[in-house]
Each structure stands twice: as C-alpha cells, then as structure tokens.
Image (cartoon, rainbow, N blue to C red; front, side):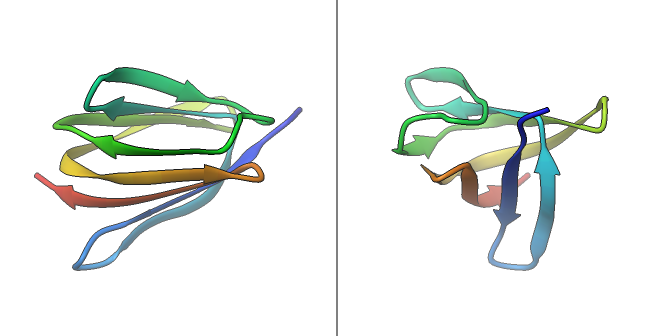
Length: 82
C-alpha cells in the first residue's frame, strides 16, 4: 500500500509525525485530498479539519488556519489550532 509522510506542526508543538494512506485538508478554496504520488503543491489552509487515515484508522485535527506543502510524498502542514 502506498503511503505518505504527514507532519503537522503548530507554534506550540509538533502535533503529528506519521505515515498515512491519505490526508484531507481544508484549503481556503475548498477541501482537497493528498495520496501517494501527488503533484507538488503549496496551499493556504482555512478553518476546518485535517482528516487522515493510518493503518485503517481515521483521525482528525481541528485547525483555524495554516499553510501546507506537498512534495515527494511528504505533506508538511504548519497550522494554528482551535
């Protein structure tokens, strides 16, 4: 199964560093999903939920705003949490 490395950080702490099968993010122009092999991307994030699936278990992190970079199957999100 193809996986991506998801890292979510806030000014206060590292919230997550994990291999996941998918990440869904609240882009300011709409939600989008990242899977293995995704094209490089930089996007702003709006208020909403980052949803990710790891080993078949879905989890969520609620955010106020942020930025995300996707490159070489690594997703790095710098966020402000609720």
